[in-house]
Image (cartoon, rainbow, N blue to C red; front, side):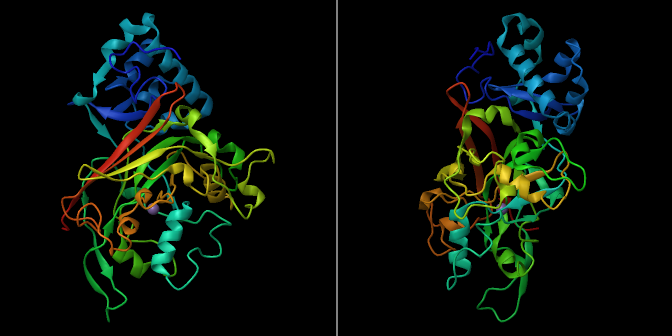
Length: 403
Ligand code: MN
């Protein structure tokens, strides 16, 4: 791979094999689109205008949606152009003045979220939760291995990394309580997830075929699906998650384009029974593919879990094929998330519900669920095409007391 001339970027987690997009502003400026290289943001708009790039207007927007709507070919050609800018010495005089140190910018929610869907694609997570919530039954419900279970979440409360999360109030009733009560959640939790952002939409009535995933998905984000377990446990029967989830969902400031993950695709651990044909590659020789992304969960600076995304049961392409198989259209800015990422080992669990086993086994000192003032940071790394590793942006959030 060619080497970048940007100071400190070569060999870092944000080398030219990564190049995630985000929305940034400097004091007094309108937010606009940039790409991260090392510890800088490249301000794309003036460089694109100087080079008379056809799509230069998409970089002046306050979200990535216009860029994402340009489609796969434009996404790929812009990426080649940016790599050229950052690796060719001849471009340096033009480009270098538009590199802004990260320390000098404010990062914003990168996308205008259209619809938001959350899946439940980890076998280990679903099994752990099933064991806790239904101790006398089979941990997995009968549909779980036949379709990627999911629910529609709340797009309007997706927030950028660093946004504080106020402890939600709601109605809850423990099994031992006679009557429900109202108050601040006492079982506030995280869900370490990966999110997928749609660039190219479809028309009502169309399906996204399994094989067309990369034609529709622009890239990935880190995602924390904050969850109030006490509210959730009382309200979720029979229609699924509602207010226990909808108060906040945090995503990374950076959207990593699919091309940066070319070296991260791996076979799924295995699906038995075989899913229905619409959930499989059209070529029977091909296997559905997952992503080899390592996740780290930090609580107040301490590493408390390392969920491995490669252990997920359902693939990203299967989730998108399923969510559109009824003809529901998808739109630019749609966000669908994997569900909690948990591996088979206790230290690979992606929620406090599992790490504390329903609040019965304290971890990281005497933690069970989130306390006011706690800060959670999710970090994500993957193999890069250059032979090293790349980082997806981190997702952080601190808990404020209920209002
Ligand atoms: Mn979730």
